[in-house]
Image 1 (tube, helix red, strand yellow):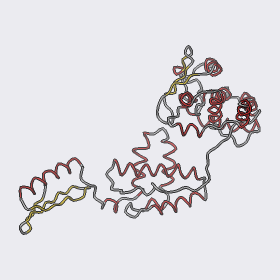
Image 2 (tube, helix red, strand yellow):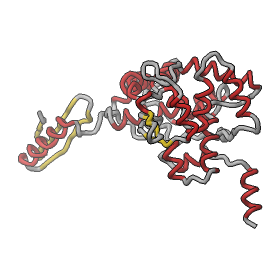
Image 3 (cartoon, one colour):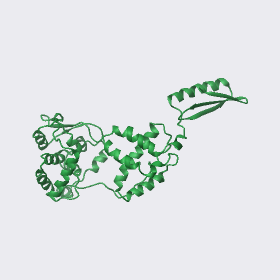
Length: 329
């Protein structure tokens, strides 16, 4: 209920709710005070009053991180990785700081400390999760954080984007080494990555009912951006999928960690260093452009929604550019 007190010739109204800032105003007429009090009570019941800033003095960063880890992160495909990252972050002293004391320079100190141990890209990805947790707390949990302390944090490290493409002869070496694996799925997975630009997780999740042999298409029901896509397949990719018999519906029934270990053995056997499996996606996308496909056509296959991100994965061979320049004379 609204509290109305008479102060001299005026009437002061106060409306209080736990977790919300006190609403107070003074009126000359009692009827105006009562009307305003009823209006503020309705807003308070809806949770529309400003959050009580005292909450910041009683809430630590750790409480926000734990709530985010346990309620928001499980909805995301990257939950397992995020759980590890957030649990490790909770061990740092910065998590004991109260939100009322937390500043951008606290995260700058944390950033510089982490940069002495890991690459800038790793720190950027980790702090992006914390930044999102603070945004959720501000926008959905009613925590009165006026400005996200991570919003303007800078990373001055060198650009970590990879531009690794297969060098002459490396594809043959990889496939020869892959065919020597006891696991029969390794070589087809490598080939499919080069033919479709699919991510490792997308390939390992392929099921028999995702493949339409007649139309030569493959459904990717869940990708990194959370959206499904149907990609057209090259003749080689379609033949490769047709040659496999599903096991429990999966065409490549191999665990992600088992494949990761097999991929490392393939690289050692082939004598190839500094090649990530994700680099095959870079290679495949670049080849699609070199075949003359347009940006929308490549995006349909790769699943990119932002063309700027798509171009970051594109690294045309300089030899091919030189041939086009020479032919243009």
